[in-house]
Length: 160
Image (cartoon, rainbow, N blue to C red; front, side, top):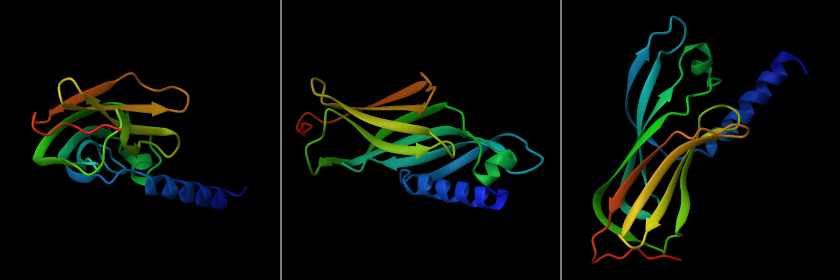
């Protein structure tokens, strides 16, 4: 396969992956390492509104690789992320929730590495638990971060 066709196929595959990522709102970023060519390495902070729980937003900070590969979207970002979820308004539920459900997925590389956020329900404490971690087709990472959002007792969390 000629280089141009290979690159076009790779870019098309990358755009398909990007179309399936979570709807994150970029809040800001800080540079962590200067790169002479391409963007600097950085830490980005993004906000994710829980699509099934009104009034809850999760803020995730994660590493973003710069340089030439990072600028072209071909770099593999590190598996390190931190999460903090907060009640930002009245909490309400349109439908019952699953006990455990993947809420967001964001690609960290052009192939097979993803940042995931899973929502779990602690029924006994009427609390929503959010776990972030990354996985890779062959070798995932045990690095993770967790956040809890307690829900007021007069608003029980409905389960399926």
